[in-house]
Length: 355
Image: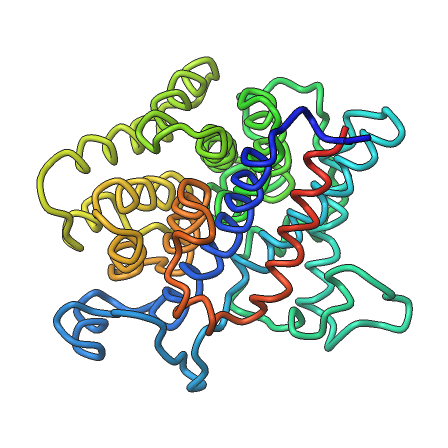
């Protein structure tokens, strides 16, 4: 007897491809941007030619394809969300998503403070030695996770959270795409992602941008266009007090995408991507404005700013829209942890289609 949510074979295959695409696309965009994360556009062009980075390039250690903390935290988000989904399915107990995702982030924090898996670690991502690499993790992520705080799932969104109340860095939004892959209604996903973002980023823009990315991914996985997904999410955002910065940034991205040929200078007019709404807006603009997946990914990393985060978010969007087969396969082959990410994506999708 089938245990699935009435998905046809074709619909299930497409869903699985989009889950893989979202996670692999995020890792690909992250790896493209990581070697130039702190470089100006002028320096990028001086080092890589007038068009900037045109594919995976070596980092400062001469290694091609390394992922950063963006993908690390995204993968731990997947692990936490998968555990929450399974708990809800098997035990009928809801409301534990924030706690389980917070515990997953605690396991990521261990990878940033320990040299490798300890003797008491027997499975999961925390047992994978390659994830014990410190790749410029965000201060708000580190400091927030050093506090024992679990957001109240029944609390109203709006006022600043108790942890890092002034922080709206992109460290929460860049890890939030997996919430949108769960085949859960966008409004529910928005709230869950926003509350989980509050474990590290207390400014409303920091957690609303995270909820917005999750909602956009939800609509993409359901088959909507990117523009349609953003417009639906804007209507959702408007219901929440304190949404204005995130809404304004997304509207600027939509407007800019309709204004002729894409360009790095247009990307930079949206900001540098170090803060949440700018990172999300840059990713949306690039995914909308560039005609091909490869063009969009390259546009998202060739700018003076947080190139790995904007690349990762853009890759999440493109992969959720086009599936893993729509990503440049020759680039994917060079991405660190590709096989682990693929297996994790498939296991996650299998959990999310079960009753």
